[in-house]
Image 1 (cartoon, one colour):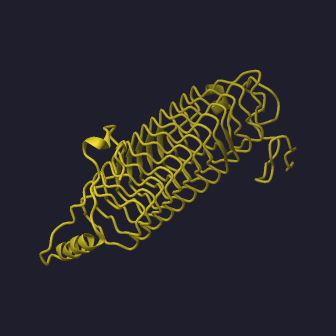
Image 2 (image 1 turned 180 degrees about the vertical axis):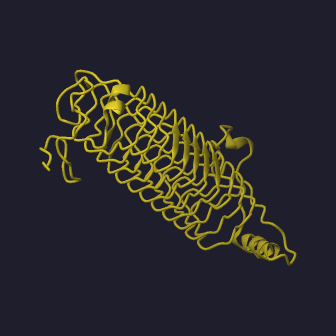
Image 3 (image 1 turned 90 degrees about the vertical axis):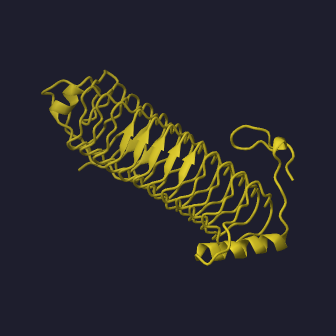
Length: 333
C-alpha cells in the first residue's frame, strides 16, 4: 500500500487510498472483461484505485478498462493492451511497459517517470500534464499523440515516431531525439533546452514560439518547417537542411549552422548575429540582406560580417562533411 502517495492531480492519496484485489478476484474481473469486449455479456473491468504494485501483469488484455488512479509502480506490463483505457492519474513509476499499446488511451496526469516504455504504441493517446521524467521511450509509435503540459525532462525518445503529433507547452529539457521523426507535427510553446536532435526528421512541422536553447544536433531535416519566432539561440544545427523553411524573426544568434542548406528559406528579420554560417549552402544576397548579421557573424565565405550586399560572401568557401567537427578544417571542394 501507499498511504501517503501523492497522485497526479496533487491531492494526497491518503484521502482515497489504493485498494487491494486478490489474484483470484482479478481473474474473475478479467474473464468478465473478455466477454464484454467480445459483446457476449460480461462487464467492463472497473479497476480504479487498485494497487498493482510489483505485479507481473504481462500480456493482459485491458482494452477500454477503467484504471484511473490505479497503482502500477515497478510492475511488469510488457505487451499489455491498454487501447482506449482510462488511465488518468495512474501511477506507473518505475514500471516496465515495453511494447504496451496505449492507442487512444487517456493518460492525463499519469505518472510514467523512469519507466521503460520502449517500442510502445501511443497512437492518438491523450496526455495532459503527464509526467515522463527520465522515461525510456525508444522506438515508440506516437502518431497523432496529443501532449499538453507534459514533462519529458531527460526522456529518451531515440527513433520514436511523432509524426502529426500535437505538442503544446511541454518540457523536453535534456531529452534525446536522435533519429526521431516529427514529420508534420504541431509543436507550440514547448521547451527543449540542452536536448539532442542528431539525424532527427522535422520536415513540414509547425514549430511556433518554442525554445531550443543550447540544443546539440547535426544532420537534421527541417525542410519546409515553420520556425517563425522560434529561439534557436546558442544551438548547434550543423549540416542540417533548412530548405524552404520559414525562419521569419527566429533567433539564431550564437548558433552554429555551418554547412547547412538554406535553399529557399525565409530569413526576414532572422537574428544571425554571432552566428556561424561557415560553408552554409544556397544562401542568396537577398536572404542575407533581410536577416540581421553582425561583425561577429561568420558568413558562408568564412569571413566575418556584417554581410554587405554585393560582397560575394554568401558563397560557401567549402563543403563540410558529417565527420567534420567544430575546430577542424573543412574539406575544400
